[in-house]
Amino acid sequence: MKLITRQSLLFFSAFIISGASTVFAADEATIQRGKQMYMSLTCFACHGQEGKGMVRKRDRKSKKTGNWKYRKGDPMPGFEAYPKLAGQNSKYLYTQMMDIFEGRRNNGMSAAMLGIKIMIDSTAKEGDLQAVADYLSQVRE
Image 1: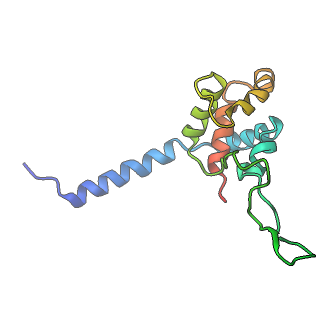
Image 2 (image 1 turned 90 degrees about the horizontal axis):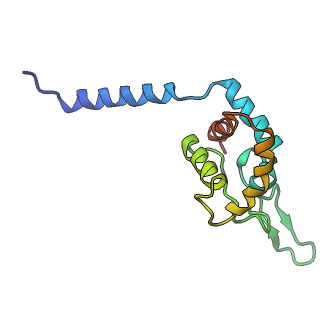
Image 3 (image 1 turned 120 degrees about the vertical axis):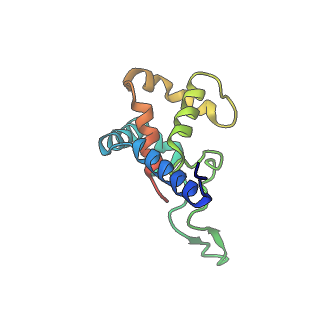
């Protein structure tokens, strides 16, 4: 009986993991549908364009003092508690959305998402929230 070497085990593990990631990758049509739903459900109003957070777009100095009022990338006042969603794991994002909408999660700013539950119930179809999660998982900073 041959012993499995550590090198062959690592190679086999890498092969399985890389194959699994391509099986679960969302197709381009799902990504586009997710992007459209992200915009139509007004998710961007709290989480920013493409889920990158509500951040300042440019640096600004005070004309009187010459000190910085804010810098590019700083959170906008009032939006510090809303998370950045871009690049997160799709399964994680979907689970968090479902936990909020089904009442299993009610901490932090999750209550704010209940305001869009009416829109989701009236406009979202089967798989749309998963498509939003797939879209956000593909966005890179």
